[in-house]
Image (cartoon, rainbow, N blue to C red; front, side, top):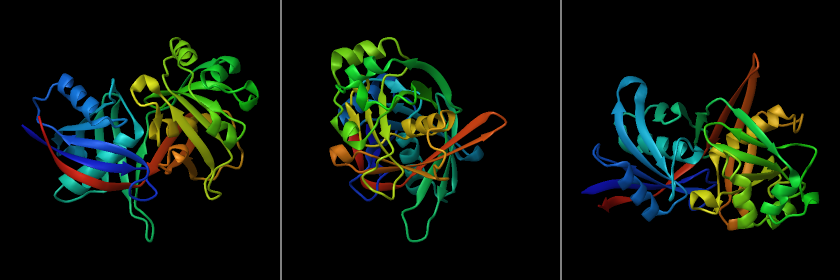
Length: 295
């Protein structure tokens, strides 16, 4: 059996940056166990599998696997898969696509920008805020002194489809110095729905950007991610709820992956109407390779 696949760079500033993703176009009879085995073999932070398509509203069934687990939602797989659907599968490309995930349907829109890479935007599920953490236990998990954390703001679980622990940090140097201490990390996540830590500060490498961020998630089989759209959505909700900065621009530019030489850029928007917070996350996608996997 030959399965067509595509490798794309998501949230990339140019080709060969950003977060790489494998997108598979699978036959209906492929089992979840086979998908997990393929995702482990591909060993990207996530691999997506495009299943049945519906002519109604350009809706496509999609499943997402890390090397270790199936996940209900993740940001860069949504945008990368929407790119493959629009550019490689649809006979007449549309600017509105819906991905049918375990968390529900996620709409994705395509925005052509003159003179700049085109951007795919997704509306994320409504944010859910969870427990908070003591700075000392999080600092231990990150091999940092407590003084490196920005304790003016809470360390808090947030989910816009996939939960993360939001960790405000004092400086870019402290973000760069962070290292996971596995015993303390495993103890921390044992009592948390969130299994990944998302560090951020308002001191970016590139002055055109708004925030610098870094994600650690050994639980998912990839210790560090160069770009994390689902966490970017959680961050936007967190910033809004906790009034992190009254002067955040309408489109927040979150840089990530600089420490592992995969510079990435995540766009974020957040609005509140009638007490309801709405988050959108966007980024550019580039095709890297395509082929067939022999199974």
